[in-house]
Length: 398
Image (cartoon, rainbow, N blue to C red):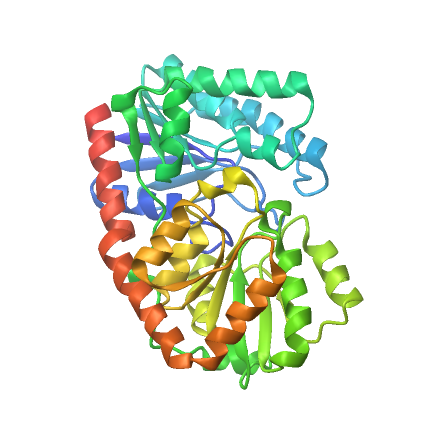
């Protein structure tokens, strides 16, 4: 099969960001298929311009689009909306396509995927990675009633016209079904990780020495620094820890719209136990996570955020590190089933600080939590097994 993937924020393994789709594409190629990816011209985390490239069986095309991702909602909208048109034009020239794979968010690129599928006589696979526009409405990013109505209509339009729908969290399935997705055509292929990319026995000594962390208890966050990530709560927890647990260092690895504001907040709080580091490509994440004593996953206390399976949690599990989970809902069920971390009520810096202190006081318990998470991931969220599920769906579609 020749699969055309329309994914504006696609990240390859040598780039920062979630690499779910690059890993899945490599698996499909290993099974004899080919994949063409149409994606944005810049990294969605850093804004860095990226070149078109190819590897065996995978071609990555980057048509131009408006390039001011992190400035404001208007700029983000222009970035997404212009890509809808440029990706359509680029997709017209991709020949002999069997399946067009659209992914949301942003939802506009999935309009391109649907239209290209119909024009090319190909099947349309629609992947829902986040519930858009529901999340945008819940956090107050999308406010105008006309835009909300149009977005909800577009969401239902795509659900009803997809040949198959894939969601990456079981929490999304009911939402999709309620809005028109066919019960037999909504499959759950959850986020996961490739355990062979991480080494739980590695302690990250070089990384720790390079950043002055050799004698610290490192609490590490890796990922986007956006409004939804609620990292201000982590900074407030760090302020509480400066006196009661001076050995703790909070290390924030990544980039995003809120990073400058977070750095100003850390300065205003006079935090000497917080370290900001730039985003790291997935190929370098094994070293970063190896340096952690515990890893943080956090989202705002919004009801809709009980539904996602955040990518970073599975990377933390694969790395064999205990998780401080300030997210309720379906991902809490995973962490508690695995016995691989401590749940903290979202939005509560005092509870987060207390959970960190509890882990520092019992390093053996923390180590066992990490190993339990690794074992659970190998059984339930191994990327290769998830890729085999995707392949079966694609073969049924073709």
